Length: 422
Image 1: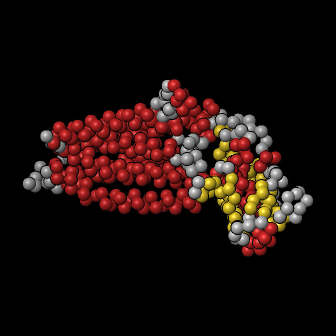
Image 2: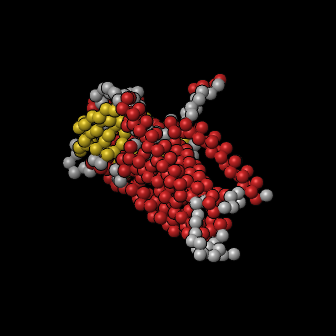
């Protein structure tokens, strides 16, 4: 009975894995009204950088036009602002801070127009009591401590927090009851401020993207920066396709190598280990493709991080199986070797995963852009393989022990003089 149940469980898991594998590598068209949302395989749906998609990378040095202003404080706001500006111009871009520089990836664009005029366009912000270009600016960008766009209840809101001096300036506007907000000298937005706090104000806008864009514009006006192009790198479509082929070959080659070694050492048990490794790899792809583009992009370092986690997963499986073999060599029966071998090693392996996960998590928040992408892929891979290896190994090896009863099926051997423990 146990044998039949174990075989059935393996069959069910194998079918589910095959379905996920097909959805990972295959793309297909959807019928009828779904044609605009044709299914793209999970592996293709990952957000890839220009090394795998092709395009142009332009890097800009950042300088402050205001004496004493910290460049780093304004870079993150300008990253958002530049991204919005270029997207409005029709570019498909990824803008990110790279140390003290700002980099712009133009995906599938090999001759982007000079964008210096776009990103160096002067940004201005002011709040006035009265409507008119010649009216006094009561609050300027320097009076803003921070700005952010967020959702409050069912409304999209732009929140402005004032400095101490800015709060004093804004207090005089509150007394008038109405304020006029100017961004880049465009038509002002009239806002009722009679009930506003003098420390901050929330302004309802049409969409969350608009609120975030306004916030980035206002803070960019506060940190008046200039951008000079210092390098341009182009990856052609052909080069990108070669990189994709190399990536596929490395992934398949590494998987096959790990599988061959596991099967060579542990026979059918090694085959189960390869199955676990495949499930972990598919789940890693599934999670990576679900991460938003603003958080994760598959760069070359990130790809190598994914390969590294596959190696760690295979090594972990090998260590668990080796411990099972060690228990068998000491005289335990086959079923007990599988059970106690796992029980004696899983906690130590989990400690290793937790330590590596903590290191990757720290790098995710303090490192440069490319290191962050590496760390993100590492965090996802470690989390996936820690769960998959430690959970599935336990169940799969028990199921196998209900199906295969001979030590040669596991590659296990012991000295002839060792008596089997009953």
